[in-house]
Image (cartoon, rainbow, N blue to C red):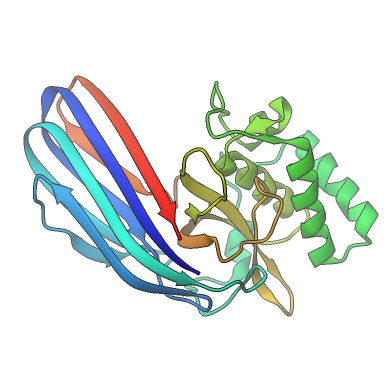
Length: 266
C-alpha cells in the first residue's frame, strides 16, 4: 500500500515568544515492509533543520527559531510504501540488546492490577511467549475502551488500566508494563495508521515485544491487531516521551496553544 501523510502542527503564542527550540521525531526510516518514497519537513518561519539520530536510532531534526513569534508552523508531507509483515519487524536500526527494553518508566510501570492481569494470561497460555503477547493484545482490546479524546488524560499505565479507558498511547503503556511483569522486553512505537472510515486521522501508537527466535513483533492493542500495511512506523522509545513527535522549549512567558491536523490517505 502506498500512503500519503500530511501532518501539520501550528503553535500560537500570546504574547509573542522570544524564541523556540524544538527536537522533531517526525521522519520514518526504511525497514523490511516500509519504504519511504518521499518525505519533507517545512518550518514557518524558515529555520535550518539539523539532522541527527537519537540513542534509539530515530531520525531527529533540531531547529531554533528566533522571535518575536506569534505563530510557528511545522508541516510534514510524505509518501511511504508499506507491505504487511504480520507484525514481525526486521531490518530496523537496533542500538541496544532487547534486555534494555525491560526497563520500566513512570509511564509504563505496572501496578498490582496489571500484574494480576498479566499473570492470568500466563496461566491461561502455558508460558508460551507469543501466545502470552497475543493474550495481552486481545485482553486489552476487549477490556479497555480506546479513545483519543479521553478526559481527564490518564497519568500513566496504572491509571489508564484502572479507569478502563485511554488513548492508543495509554494502551501501549499498559501493554509494555504487563509484558515487563512477564519478563518480556517491550517498547513504545509512535507512527501513523490509516484506519478505514475514521472520522479523523491522528498520530498513532502501539508496542513491540521481543519474541525468542522471532525477534521484535508489533502489537496494536487499541485496534486489537498486529501492525498492518496501514501502519507507518516512525519512532521508538521506552515510552511515549522518548518517542515524542516534538519536544522543545520556548523563551518567555505567556500562553501557548497547539492545533494539530493529520491526514493519512491511500
